[in-house]
Amino acid sequence: MGAPTVKIAVCIKRTPDSESRFKIAPSGTAIDEAGLKFDIDDFAGYAVEVALQLNEKSGGGETVVVAVGPDLVQESLRKAMSMGADRAVQLKTDAAPADGLAVAKALAAELKDGGFDLVLFGKHAFDTSAGVVGTATAELLGLPCVTAVSKLDIANGRGSARRDLEGAAEMVEFPLPAVVTIDEGIARPRYPSLKGIMAAKKKPLETKPAQLGVVRVAVQKAELPPERPAGRIIGEGTAAVPELVRLLQTEAKVL
Image (cartoon, rainbow, N blue to C red; front, side, top):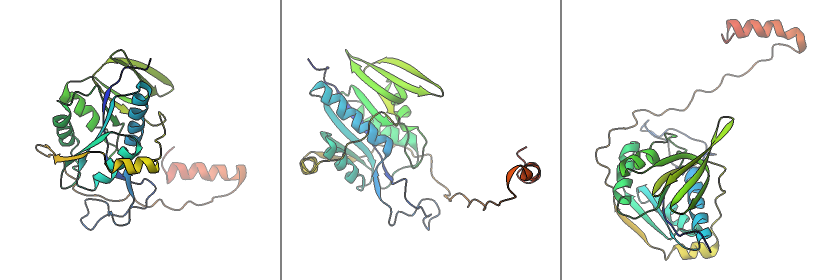
């Protein structure tokens, strides 16, 4: 007998490929998107895979992917459905807001009456690394929240999760419904099959306006980190140690 079926929402984000070479846009407040490859954020991809595995293990359930943003996010939603998600919801905005709380309000408004047993997020998004949206959504929904989970099991209306800490691990139990943010290492996202890609074209993708409320955070300036200065060789072997120590004291000022 399989595990009980669950209804899972996975909140995803469209972000640029982390291996890209970035430039600042002429506006000075964002990256230049010309020529960049975009995809489901890495951590959100892990969350999609976890949801699919949980429902495959149970032999049923439903996986719904949700994203806030302009029509470009539909590509990421379709990809999640080609992986196996059942349907998708786009909460439409002109651009992806920088205000994590505003995004959380839009997601909470969509999720609150959805009857979800579990809401999954990536631990944080590659582009902002803020880690705000998942926890804020949980607070707005009044649900328990477990963050940075590296293993997740669901049974008998409860969840159990492993969180990897510095030099240790923590096991957490919680009641459903709940919000969980997913860390790396938990599951490798599957590649969409041709059958999955074709099936995704027929799966429902609903678009509705995002209920952001007041957006109170905006990017004022974006800049790349400064180029690292070139290193220099000061000698070889033990004879170079005194000069190295002197430079660390007088120039680098780290000793």
